[in-house]
Length: 126
Image (cartoon, rainbow, N blue to C red):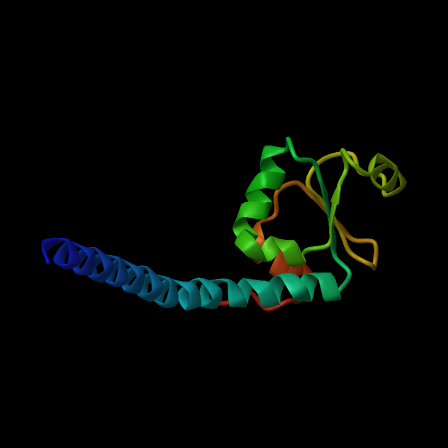
């Protein structure tokens, strides 16, 4: 009988732990998605307008630019110049990061979200 009681306590403990984990996931996941949604729209807008960021993995300013977008950077049209040097040479990339717009405008160096919004006309979330 004691053995059955121990098993019941163990199963109950596991059930409570599983419930806590499930609730934690449900509570935090929507908040994370909601936080990235406004920047996702901004990143998609930049891409829709034809903006391209050229950079290199070792470039600290490129890393700062990427971090500003967070997970939404995946929606940016990005060219990694260490992997595609021919594209960067053809675009006359002399420094990183460089943003190029379809009308030929170039923004060289770390820009930040506000400057990119001004240059592109894409709305930056509040």
